Image (cartoon, rainbow, N blue to C red; front, side, top):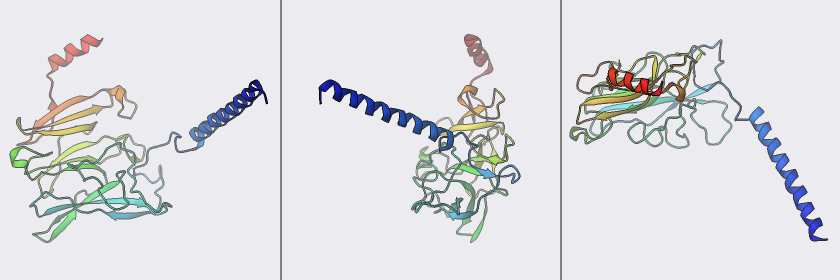
Length: 267
């Protein structure tokens, strides 16, 4: 076979394979896992979204060293999961649990980071008492408990407070509590007897931190400025703060004069 003829065969084979690859990608986008769909989450309106069979998953407790208060995340897993390594599904919030939150794997074992934690059992070992954190299901994205060195200003929260990040309402009315809904920051004492909201319910928390030197909780939040029912990059973000000694509703960290000056610079 001549070199020219051989090259023709190679080009023909490569062209055919490339065409098949393009066709496969198209099929996956149209009918596969990449197809656009409503994000999974906690169903709050059964008429808009049916609820599949589910089982409870009780996760190992989280607690601060030396504390006799434990927080047991409660998640759900699809009962029809076919995999041998079932996943506690979270509804794609995009959040990752760090060592300051539910730990590397909140449920341990085969349960991975994508979790749908919808409540927490607060267990007071000393008082032999336990109760639920939420009176109605929500989507608990994270919990920040004091570290052993909190008195020195280390860790994600002061020694006497727990910082929660919770989606407690279907803010866009699609029948599901998911990543499209607002995530609100709450503060509680170690017993979590009540939750104090410290960020607006019409904004979603992107990040949070405790600044021990200035005694502040600082939050980056996003509002739905374009009114499309979602919190996306196009909406921008703001930074809010509140006292970590006497928390209340957080306010803008940057004063309005500077905000207006910045807005004029981009108009």
